[in-house]
Structures are given as C-alpha cells and as structure tokens.
Amino acid sequence: MKNGLMWKLLRKHISKSQLVGFSLANLIGLTIVILAVQFYQDVLPVFNDQESFIRKDYLIITRNITSAGAMLGNKSEFSDADIHDLESQPWCRKVGRFSSSNFGIMATIGSGGAGTMHTQFFFESIPTEFIDVDPTWTFDPKHPEVPVIMSRDYLSLYNFGFASTQGLPKISEGNASSVPMTFTFNGNGRSETMHGHIVGFSSRLNTIIVPESFMKWASSRYGDGTVQHPQRLIVEVNRPGDPQIQDYMDAHHYEIAGDKMSSGKAYYFLTLIISIVIVVGIIISLLSFFVLMLSIYLLLQKNTKKLQDLLMLGYSPTQVSRPYVKMVVYINCGVLVLSVILMLLARMYYMETLRDFGTNGGTIVAAIVVAVVIMGCITMGNVLAIKRKVRSLWIQD
Amino acid sequence: MEKIELYNTLPAVFAGREDDNSEVWLRDISFEKGKRYLISAESGTGKSSLCAYIYGYRVDYSGKIAFDGRDIHELTVPEWCQVRQSSIAYLPQELRLFPELTAMENIQLKNRLTHHKTEKEIVAYFEQLGIPEKVDSPLGKLSIGQQQRVAIIRTLCQPADFILLDEPVSHLDEANNAIVARIVSDEASRQGAGIISTSVGNNVKIQVDKEFKL
Image (cartoon, rainbow over all chains, first blue to last red; front, side):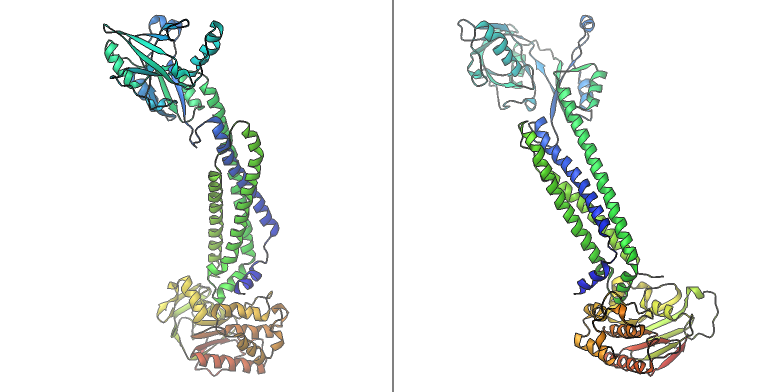
C-alpha cells in the first residue's frame, strides 16, 4: 500500500503523450540500429564463405610491366624493402611470397597413348596458410612424388577449350587425382623424372602450386643456387574494397590480379552504407533519450513540492525516486522487446530474398547484444538523471 | 538523541542585525530530551526558519546547530532520514499534507514508514480530535482546522526524542487546543520525548519547562 500511495501521488503530471513519443522514437531508432547490425550479419556469408565478422580476403599483386619498361629491363621483382613497406600498411594483415622454379621442368600428362601431352612446365610455391585447398600435403624426398594444386581456371581451359575440340576425355575435379603425370627436372647437370598427381584446384591462386618443402629441395638439387626475389605476392587484407589499397597500388605501379577489387568495392560500400544507417539509428535513439530526459525533468519539476514533502516525512531520495525509476525501466524494457520483435519480423521478410543467394543468414546474437547494450546505456542515463534531480530537492532554501 | 544545541545561530537574512532582544538568535542555548519548551515569537522573527534548520531542510544560517554535540552539517542523507523517522517528529506550520489522498492515507504514508501506530490507535486519535467521520474523506475537502488535526495525528505516528511543533493550534479553538495539548503531552511522556513548540500568540496548552522569546 505504501508504494501504491506513492504512485498515487507521483503519477500526477505524467504526460502520456510525451512517454508515447519517446517510446516510438526510441523504438524506431533502436530497431534501425539492430536491423542494420542483423542485416550485416545475414549478408556477410553472401560475400564471404567464412562467417566471420571480420572478413578475410586475398589479393595477388605483381609489378606493372609496360612494354617500354620490359625493354629497358626494369625490375619486376619485389625487394625486401617493398614487402616490408606493404606489411606496414593498415589494411594489410599478411604478405606471402611466390617462389618460382629456377630449373627446367617438362611435364608428361597422360598414360603414354594418343592424347598424351608433353609440355614445358613451371611451378610456384607459397606458404601453406595462403592456400584455399587441403593444406596438409607434404613432400618426402625418400619417396619422391610431387603433389600439385592447379588453378581451377586451367581445368576449365582444358575441359572446354582443349578437350572438347580435340576429342579428348573431360576431367572432373573428382577424378583429376587419377590423371597420370610425370615430371622431368633438368638442371645442375641432373635430369630426373618423378611421378606427380593433382591434389586439388584453387580458385584463389592462378598458377601451379607445389609444397614449399618440395620447392626448397628441388631448387637446391636442380637450381643454380642464386637467390630469387619474388615476382608475385599474395596479400591478406582486412578491407578488400578500401580505396586506400587501390591508391597504394597505383602509387607503386603494382597490379592486382583479377577483379578482386570490384567485388571488394561492393562489400566496401555495403559496409559504408550499413555504418551510415547505424549512425542514423543511434542519432534517433539519442534524440529520443533526450526527449525522455526532458519529459522526466518536467515531471519532476511539476511534482517538486510533493517530492519534497515525501522527503520531509523521512523517505529517502532512493525511495522517492523508485516509482519513476520503475516507470523508465518498464518502458525501456518494453521498447527493447518490441524492437527485437520488429527486427525479427523485418528479417523474415528480407531473408526470403537472401535465401536465393544461398545463405541462411548469420546469428542474431550480435544484434540482441547491441540492443541490450544501447538500451542499458539509455536506461542508466535516465535513472542517474532521476536520482540526481531528486537528490537536488533535499535542501529547500 | 538527548540534546539539541544552538551556538550563535542566526538566519542568513538577519545577517548584520544586532538584535539583543532575541533569546535564541546569536545565543548558545540547548533543548534537552524529556523537557518542554515554548518559543514565542512575533511574526517574521524566523520561527519557521528555526524549525527548518533543526529539521535539516534549510541551511541558510550562520553559527552552529548540533545533535548531541555533532554539527548537523556533518549528517549524511541516510542519517537525516533516520532522524526524521525516529528522532524528531515535526509538524510544519504549512502542514504539508497531500490533498489528493484521504486523511487516513496521508497518515498511513508516514506510519507505513515507521510502523509506530496501529490503524485502531489512529482511528482513536480521529475520535478524540472530533473528526471520526473524516477518516476516509479526501483531505482537500477538509477545513483548515480539520487538516491541522490530521497533520498532528501524522506527527505522532513515529518514535521520537523531540516533538517539534510549528504553531500547532493556530487554526484550532480552545477545546481542540486542550485535546491536542493532552494527546501530545501523553505521547511525549510515553516516549520520554521533549517538546519544542512555537507560537505567535495562540499557545498550545502544555505546561512548559522553559520559554524562549525569539
């Protein structure tokens, strides 16, 4: 009954329209923020097979080779200083070096009958962590057999460009490992032949990759001992569409292989737009926070005498604040729950479209955590303001 | 609380005034628990200010006021709440009742905090003060004299070392004055509390140990 009596006294002058206005504004602001966060989570897998909040992407770069430069013998290698400079860029996570074979390789593909191909060949290797196919391969010099990873583009080139016109059987990714291959290595006065097999196809690496351990072994065995600087680098970046990357590449006359930057740009703009939407949502939430503050201040101002009289009876400022604190907490919890429901409804709507892109969306944990944190901050601000105001009524000079 | 002491106290608005006639302002005086005091004053001499200083909701004075030797400026908010719930029972001149509540609700707002009187005892006070039918009336509908009696009942709904009454009978007739004097006296005796009462002429009919002229 005590609390009932307090509420009976203190509810006077509560403006329902102001509270409804605050609740609506806050509901809209909060819903925009968490919907943007949720949309980002849901769209991320479309851009990236890794469902990580921070997206990984790789760029393969070379030096720009102009015809004039090639004739003048401009260097096409990257020096240690170039690589160090690249590694120090804010968008760069890791740099991997391509090592190329510096000895002669002749490949024989086929079982020796009609359709057997003989061709000059080349190998490259990069650190295992940059490879997108089974990275558990090894090379053992005691039982020399060379595992290779080829670019998926080469497979298409063979199947649709070569095999179909020459009447040769097509190769699928599944049976590629059974294609007989032998490699003959020439150099250092040696000529040795060993078997090889394809262990996979890479979309990321547009080359023929062998294990680094094999490359080291073969270079020392067949190479002339000169240390080569890499001509191609693979760079792991955190924001693939970042204009800073393109600027850097242009300034240093580097070239990015493929169209990585354009898909990166779409991702970059998506991030940018979502950030803008989140900021707008936060601004609306902040404004609604001030609407509630004003409303509460007005309410406390109108009820000043009653609050002071209650303090005179021996009620503590905490006890006197409690009805208003409760009111704010109830309203804010209501807004929180409603905005999560609204977000989930909107999500159901857009997920129908997103499913066509082959994704089932991301987790809703991040959006809910963001909602709870924002609402927690707003509620804390409101409660502190109420307590401070009531406390200021203690002395009645 | 055994003692309320004033040392050279003077309201800020009287600063610079040399008033030799007052027996309270700029003097060192003390009120002791169990004794009864009357502070008689003319209007505008700071009678309600004195009550506000002692009750801790105004601090616009110079000098020092102490409870049992402790300067009341040092009291924290929770300590003041304790004082207001269990040491000093105060009847403000302006009554400070809530017109939107009933007479009983006004009293319960205090009594629920202190749990000092039963509802039966409260109703008995209404009867003694001649307003038994007003228990559940909205306070706003009561006359000022009836409201004063409700405020007096509310004042008695707490344990106290001192009962501080600011013009307790200003709106009451002789008969009701006598009733108020008796029930306040009885409550003070029961608790061993002191009484400090102010008046601008219409004194509550309580036998006092000492009278101060403000």
